[in-house]
Length: 422
Image: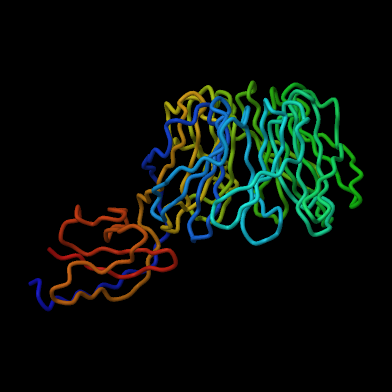
């Protein structure tokens, strides 16, 4: 039966089903884990991770071997109050650099990547009092990357103009913005320049500043009463080709999205009982064409993903509970199996963890024959998981646990038909 076997199965394409998550711990010694992002730092074709530990004063990156196994590398220790990291190619040399904030050092720096994951620090400022958030974008539309920051203690939102040679000049957007906690950018009014969106923890407000194209700013209110507003991001949640705003309020226990209609914003509460939401990421997790959300809740110790069901609203699904002091989330295909995974860090637990997405319904796969040559035990790609005929992920890497049967392998770019025989 094993010799000369030829199996021919025609399996039509099927839509992705619901998802489950398998936890993988990356680091258990990053005390005060407060920020995490994903990018291919060493340009080897897989997403790596970077995380900040405020209590441990660490900035660290984690080299991915392509299967979701990570090797830690300290970028810097003694970075006092390491609080935020953002990815951007600041020097436009084709590799991702880092932009960081250190709360206790009042520091914003960018870290030049040599393309192999080695970083050289370049200080932008050491006097932005209590800076908690940074991001990077071409604010003045001159073709280079500028840097923005929100200073909690100083109560200020500002941007630093890049002269094209990575020399930065500070430009203030707003002072008196009590406990400024988060800042991001997007073209909210569709006029081809970058506007600024921010949240003030002390004022419990979410604002946006309209850029006139010459970096003269007009302030507008998005939400005048989001208690302890601590996070903002933008994403097109309703697929109408303009960026909507998502915000979290730590004391409101609330995550909401604000539908953008020509810069008139309508509030929709996604979750009004998530105890101290802290970090949010946006991505199409279940590959249905809609942008979903993932959130970390600091006091609830939870990671939750919110499925975007369009007119039906958002439905919450637990990813993790008991994740003590959940602070930040990132989304990327960490195991190169063509579905998004989730990474998060936890302040009190001192952990960086990723959750592998496990499809529980039938996953997309092509029609075609499955053939096996006599004497061969396995034909599969070196990267990616193995699925059974029902679409359940069975193994990553080693296949010694698999019983005799028919399996699919999915590599970084395409499916490959495979048969395992014992």
